[in-house]
Image (cartoon, rainbow, N blue to C red; front, top):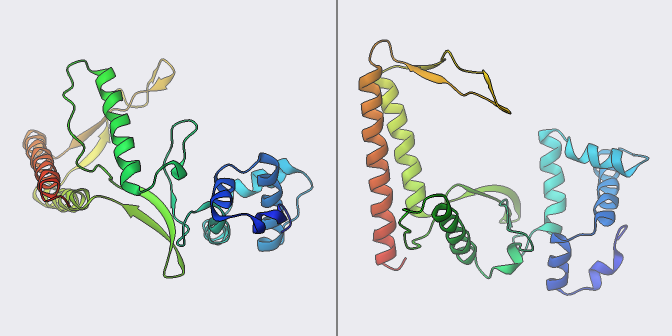
Length: 229
């Protein structure tokens, strides 16, 4: 009501589009109004308000998100996908989460083909894996991590394998001699495994684990695709 009162006379489609493509002036005015309403903070300039809104504490961020997500989310549960979209596209361009997932998968496959001329493209079988979202669940604001069923099981296998490997061969990562050295415009990452002389066995077990995880993931994707699930 303070920033764009006519919003409440618009239809759902226009409201959702506004939430995703809000004019910069409206966004700053909304930030200033909310900072005052929620936390009692008054800022003289737009720049100060923008900086303050970007540096809230974790508790304040939760309260902020609960308040603004009915504006930025879509549908009755105010669903919002925390993913990057190509230029001139947003979540409103996709009828379903599956439609977004398939579009994103084909985009990634095209990038892989450009990087490797010998890359063999794989058919889409669902690729959603650890994607972040925010939404209301039974009226309560929630953060969500979304995966295909195969991706969820893959992550569980990986966690269990990581824990088991650590029990079989205790290890830690230590800096190598090149770690932290500047190289061009970046710095070297050189962390090595220290397993008290069992590094070779550790690396071989880890290779076998990775291979097993990938095989299971691929088998699960294929099984559910064949079952049309």
